[in-house]
Amino acid sequence: MLSLNRIIELTLFDFFQSLLRLRSAFFFVPYFFFWFLIFDHVSVETVEWLQGVQGLFFASWLLENQELALQLFVDRSVTLSLFLLISIFTMPLFVMMAANNQFSSDASSGAFRFILTRATRTELFIARFLSALLLVTLCILVTSTWAFVTAWLNQDDTTLRLLSFTVETILILFFYASAFVAFMSLVSSIVNSAIASLFLAGMLYLSLAILSLWLRHDISSATFLLPSSIKPWMIDIHPRNILIACAALSAYAICYFICGWQVFNRRSL
Image (cartoon, rainbow, N blue to C red):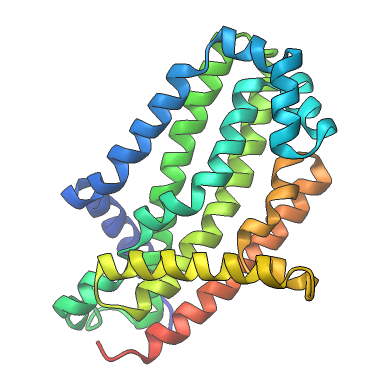
């Protein structure tokens, strides 16, 4: 029988251990250094350029949608729009780095034999998933706050509109991250090495992306092999699109989570 208290204890223990482990620097250092470089170059001049003719032309070409470019860089905060776009495109890589070792190392070292005398496999699997999701969510909150402060300093928009856009961005990125954390729960359940887990996740993601591109003209549903297919709804922020994106990403997360639990439940630990 599941014990909520045990799940909470295991989640918090693993979360704080993740913050203190030296190997977490493998994720934290490149993640925050990357965003430092981004925010360091987003100045008032950058905002003005993106709202000008050349900037909007470039954004329209990049997004392949002039109306969407106007919505993001004229109607909304340029800084927060850039943060949302870059986060969506880099999220898979950073989540793979953050959540690649949910089970791999402990499975190879035999540590689970000790843990499983005090908790069930299901409790352990849920706790490790929640711990990884908490870690990624903490990073999303920090960078979102950073983006909000940068946008406020750049005088991108009114404070109330900036707060509203920031909350919407956090909501979308949380559900997007949860899908990939669940994806990594599945991958990490298969192999006994953190490096092998990262490599397998990268190869699996790349293979599914290539397959979806190859089959999209013959089988339209093939484009939905990965959570990344929900990008159009995540970028074009409207209440209806936010609901669609969150519901679809939740479905991906549940699917990956169930598959990962099935694998983990049958593994010899």
